[in-house]
Image 1 (cartoon, rainbow, N blue to C red):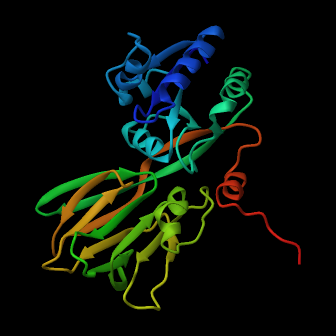
Image 2: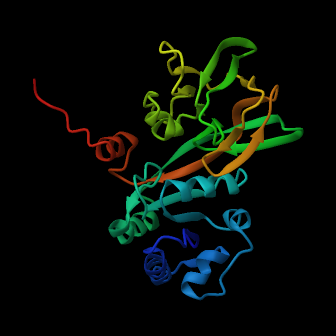
Length: 286
């Protein structure tokens, strides 16, 4: 690994010191470091790229310092680049990040020795008409249909492969990728899904009908959501970061994207290990 790109969340207090540490460690190993502009400002260097998109296409690996939100933003901005990503957690839960800050030096040594594996994660995409405008968005975790400030239920019709699933009266609806099962969908009562399992999880948020439950369908399916509410604000949000307004009769089509990302996994790092740690699953003896 001779060319490594660094991306950090500048709003995290620890970002400056850990980026400086990473730069020194990589250069000591004989590697070249490139940074996107906001990260470069943390360490006062001219080794910058115009943006994350161009950086991802010009390096052999990206190291991202932050939490899951930072990882989600990077995944969408890579525009299909296959550059491996190592996530270093300086945020909260960190389901997408592979290591903690104190493991950085050992992780870089393992990378130089090629002692790691790559895990592919599919993105999902949304397209359609939104309040009179054509939209196209990608997400790694989920798309969420939600109400505005009014404390009233919205009404949505959901179709799977052109067959009506049901109509929901609810606070919102989450359509998540396998990766996104441990995000908002989990908080709303959805199942935990292994990230290599090719499924969508469709989870209503506070549905009016008590029998309404989270539904899992194939990732090859075409999921469509039609807005039936007329006088209420409804929004579509990608990964909790990009929001567009919707109106009555707007039809949004969700499907698996051709784009994917590749996450670096080091020995001892796995989804199930992370799950046990982050959710404090200790088990018990009967």
